[in-house]
Amino acid sequence: MTAALARKIRIGILGASGYTGAEAVRLLARHPNAEIVIMTADSHAGEPYEQVYPHLGGLDLPGLVKVEEVEWAGVEVDVVFCGLPHGTTQEIIAGLLHDTQHSVIDEVMHEGPGDAAAAIQGQPRVIDLSADFRLDSTDTYAEWYGHEHYAPHLQPEAVYGLTEFSRDKLPGARLVACPGCYPTVAILPLAPLLSAGKIAPEDIIIDAKSGVTGAGRSAKTANLFSEVSEGLHAYGIASHRHGPEIEQELSKAYGDNLIVNFTPHLAPMNRGILATSYVRLAGETSVDDLRDCLVERYADEPFVRVVGNGVAPATRHVRGSNHCLIGVFADRLPGRAIVVSVIDNLVKGSSGQAVQNMNIMYGLPETTGLEQEALFP
Image (cartoon, rainbow, N blue to C red; front, side, top):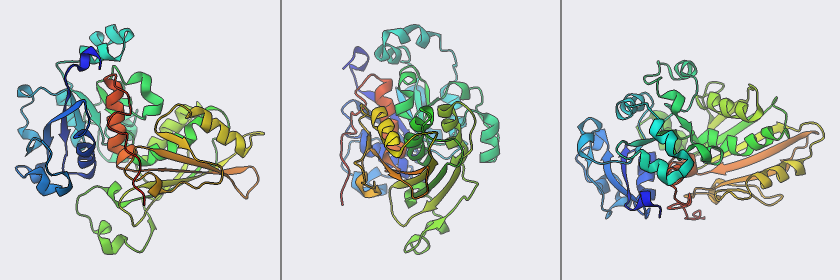
């Protein structure tokens, strides 16, 4: 443990009664370097946590309070995990990160992540699980989320926390925007192929299926058992908010603006996302070249793995884990390939990736607290 981590990281979880908040509690409660000191849940304030989530009973956790009742000045908090609805988070984070000066952090970054973490002591760092800081452009945010950005002065410093692509930016970050679940499962397989020039930027089709927890825990008619079970349906067709986020990051990988065809579907399951991406090979590239590119890119990554030739990844292969599995197949159409990727939307697609980012922010092995393998069957 580094000198900066001589004690445990003190954590606040905003929105602890939501699915992502509960998943963060599940992972952090057994994290050897973490201590949860604040939990908010407006609709369940004052209730024992085990009454909201019986499977998490018996843990030494603080009581649930409303966000506005948190006395930040009276509680020492190192990291705040925000699992609140979009829009709400921006205003709260703006209050927490009122000082936008980075001079102290910049001065120590050359010393390593432990010193960077120590330099930020005294003010909370924020890991946001909402969509509030994922889009670089506040104008794009306003277009897709239907209201102005409430903290535009903080957007430039937000680190897009797709861990495998932002590792060097995390140690000194005050604000980390965890990617959406759909973008995570799409970007991990496609970004390396675009960066290496293995696939064409045109005609990328991302067909994705998600479990119902991706829609959150609030009561919605469309998420009732009788509405979801025994069926499968597309939604957000040509209008899903994760579309511009996927395009933003894939455009960075490619080096120029691109547009993808992205359609999400709701599947009758609790957890998991499966993305089937249809791509056109670039030049003389073969399907084996795609596989080799991904194998090389993720050879040293603890949570991303390219499966064996002919193996089709399934959501049940990653359930409850922080892993992403990727499979590559030849299409029947000449010059095209099919890439299949899977994650657990609540872990690698949300809270697990948030913990992975926190570990790097504090100079810990990024697998800490995330070593569990998938639950199967």
